Amino acid sequence: MTEEFEYTGKWRLPDNPDKKVHGTLKITPGEGAVLDLIGSFVPLPDSLPNSDFFRNSHTIFGFSSNGKKLSLFNCFLTQLPLHFPGFPVSSFFVDTVLVGAYFQKIEDVKLKSISVYYSHLDEWVGISGFELGNLNQYTSRKELVVKYKKPRSIETNINGLKIKIGNDFSFKTLSAPLKEIIMKERAFIAIEPSESKFFEEYTTDILYHIRNFLSLGVMEPVYPLTIVGSTEEDVDVGGDRDSKVEIFSDLRNIPKTIKELHPFDMLFTYVDISDRFEVLLKNWFEKASLLEPIYDLYFGTLYNPHLYLEFQFLSLIQAIESLHRRVYGGAYMPKEDYSEIYENLFTAIPESLDNDHKESLKSRLKYGYEFSLRKRLRELLNKYKENFKDFVDITNNNTFISKVVDTRNYLTHHDKELKERAVEGEELYTITQKLKILLEICLLTELGFTSEEIRNLFSKNRRYKNEFIQ
Image 1 (spheres, rainbow, N blue to C red):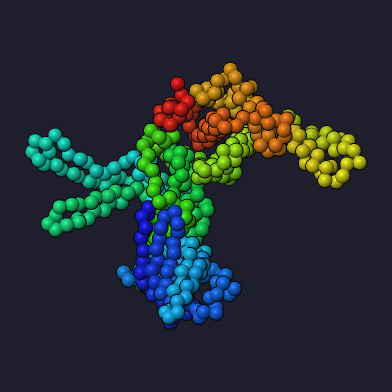
Image 2 (cartoon, rainbow, N blue to C red; image 1 turned 135 degrees about the vertical axis):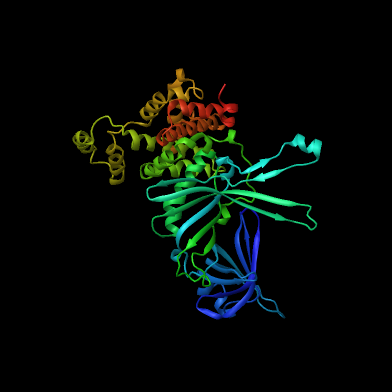
C-alpha cells in the first residue's frame, strides 16, 4: 500500500447504530487516514473544542459502498466547519483502520494468523515465478511467451510459530479487445502461532523482530504496507467463518514513495542465507531479550535518517557500549570485590559537599568496576580487526578510539576542554558510519555469521565498497 485509496459509505458510532452519516475515508501513506463526513454524529454544542466529544478518541463503524465493514480506531474530531445557510461537515483523524469486521477496540482484535506485505521484501527474497521467453524469438517470429508458475513457499518453525514466505499472483486485463494485461507478483510473510493472539501481541512480540531482521539485511527502513489477518470464528464478519481482515496502522510513517533497491545495496539477502534461514532467524528471536536495547538504538538511527548527526553518533556508541556489556560483560574486578572499595571511596567524600554533589559522585563511583568505553572499544576492534580493517587503519586504533571517546564525552558533557579534541562535520559523519559498520559486524556475529562470511558480505556491498573498501 503505497498509493492513496478511499472508502465511501455510511458511518456511525458503535453505541448509536441508528445515527448514520455519509462520508469518505481517505487513506494516504505518509499522511494517515482521514474521515470526512457530510454531517455530524452529535449536535453542535457537544462537538465544540471544549467538549468531551472533541477531546476524546472514538471508534467509528462504517459500511462502504462496495459492501465492506470497517472499524476505525482512535479517531479524533479535527474540525467541524459550519456554513450559514448550509449544514455542518466534520472530519476525523484516524489512527488505525480495520477492513472486514466490526471491533469495539483495536485491543479486542484477535487473529489466528497474520500475513504482512513488507516494502523491499520482493527484492530481499529474490525469488520470482515469471519466465520470459527468448527475446530473439520475438524479433524473428514476432512471438513472445511469458509464463508464470507460483514459486514454492519457504516454510520454517520458530519457537512455536509457523513462518512462511510466499508469493501472491494477480492479473487483470484492461481493455476489450485485449490490448493490455497487468500481471503482478508480491512476496509476503505469514505467521501462524500455535494459538490465536491479539493484534498487539503480533506487532510487539513478532512483527517487530521480523521487521528488524529484514531491515538489518536490507540496510533500509522496512514498512508493513498491508497486514491481512485471519479472525476467529465468532467475530462479526457478516456470517463468514475464518474471514480475512485488512489492517492499516502507523500510516503516517509509511513514505509515499519507496526507493528501489538492488541486492548489491543490501547487507544480506535471502539467497545469501537460504541454506540456514531458519537457524539465523531463530538466533535473532532467541537473542531478542538480550539485544533488544541495542536493536532499539541501532534501528532508531536507521528509521530516522534525518536525526541530527550528533544524536546518531551518540545512539550508535551507546548501542556498542551496551552490546559489549551485555554480550561480553567487562569488569576490572568482580562486583562483590568492588563493593568494599566503593564503600571506602564513598566514605572519603567530604561531608562539606551538598547532598546533590555527593549523590552525583556516588552514582559515578557505583559502576567503577566496569570497563571504560575506551577499553570496550579496544576489545571489540581487536576481536573484529579482520572484518574492520577495510574501514579503519588498524595501526591507528588508538587514534580512532580517542576521537570516539573524546567526542562522546564532549557531546555528553559539553566540556570546553574536550571541544578541540572532539570531531565534527565531515569527520564526525565518517566516524559515525564506521561505528555503524562495527555495530553491524557485531550484530551479524550474534546472528550466526562467521568472520569470513561477514567480510564477504561487506566486500560485495555496493554502498560500503564505494565509500570505504579500496
